[in-house]
Length: 499
Image 1 (cartoon, rainbow, N blue to C red):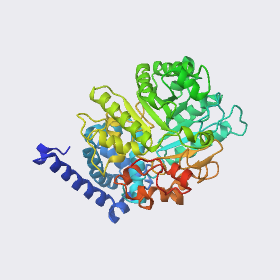
Image 2: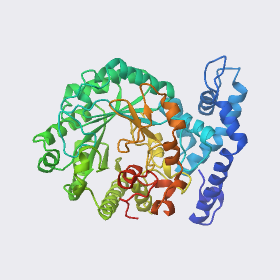
Image 3: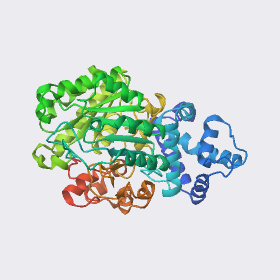
Image 4: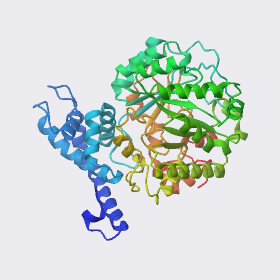
């Protein structure tokens, strides 16, 4: 770690300047033509051991040994190059290389994640933000069926549905994701538990090495079902709770009794040892109650709390009058970030997030002078997209901690995740209705690399309006879905942003 003592710096400003200088050099180094050529070479498969050279290099970096003599020389050289970039990453996030190396030895998910970013530098070049070679997370609406009919459902879920994928088709999707190198699979709906073959699909996905995330309304999660999910390999469960009382939650969801069932589902998942994230959709109906929901989540044993923005797609398109104004969104983000800071300063391990890209900016500002930080020291502009990784690495990396939100990345579309609809259509995110391909017939890796829409979204110099001149443009990016839905242009400014 770079600090004032080691460097003989006279002030925090001096340390920051030195860090930025080294990090800027690292970005230039990783983006050089020779380094990119060498990283491309490392992506090739060894004809003797069958492993990619980047995998062997990461193993040598973490363990100090190479099993294959044929690719040993390139792997050792590669580990030196990777060590420069990974050391700079560790410095910028205030974590030790030993923690990172331990994580690489113990957790295959972290290995795949770092490999994806290394290969991303080889393909895209070094950039801020940095796209990986494949989507880290595939969010898959596995069914449009649901036992509820919530008025604000962005998926427009239905009680009955007959044209969803079969079990065999679902397994083929999982195979494609596994071959592509996707790190995590987020299963959502509708209500995924409406599928009688869900557990079998989850087990198959786990067998393919995918980290598993499940989003559910919680009403169907009995004690037995929670244990089934755990035994099937689910790492993380998101359960919706839109109010701190049954009065608010049941009213918003138009489902009497759903609050008590959701609370029971949360308790069952916690007792089963699952990582539980409680999520609330922010509307004018529950705006003043959301921090109370956070406290309910903590009291129930959840490990994180997440606010979801109401995006006007699906049935939510009819609820424009309940969408937060830009100023309301800013006030909520500031309140949530300040409460998170209080929790962190008290020494309690807990995470808060807000699925609005501007929350990244608010968090960085609120924690700038905090005595403790949820993610260590963050230095703009090199590492803001990785501010959550320090905690994840310390806790044993992705699996068993927080697989869905290891990063605070601003807008995730095209940079972190892709969305797959119940019919197999691939889109940038659940709220951005632009078809990029069909998972049943197209290769998801090729969609990720060759889509013109994704290429435009990643290039934040193409942003228009207020987003184009924002000081945190590269960190945040604005909500591309809201820009498209409101202005019919995915490069337009985010009309919901107050900054």
